[in-house]
Length: 110
Image (cartoon, rainbow, N blue to C red; front, side, top):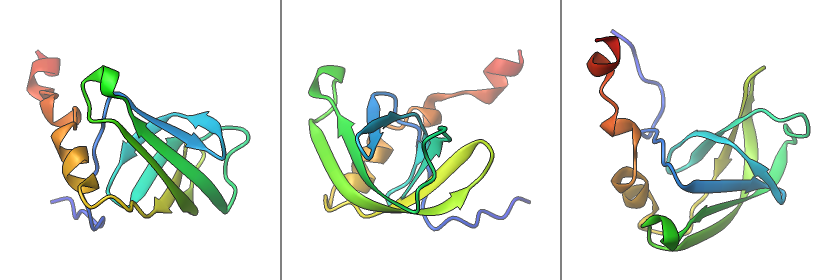
């Protein structure tokens, strides 16, 4: 059995946009306190300003979250930053708009 070491569930939210120090960054997945981004040539700084946006046009409630982020893991493919969301509903929004939960792996194997 796989032992999940993360404290919080991770989500994939289509329509969630991220900027790291003002530069667009591709989100791989997100939890209420950590953000895994596709590694970029300019990325990997120890501390950064992160901006996460949900757009009302995409059917989401409009959210514009800014936070200080700290690099906690750096791999050849990804960068993981810890951040603090000052929005109490943030974990519930991530769960509500998670698209990974809709993915049916058995359907892909057929």
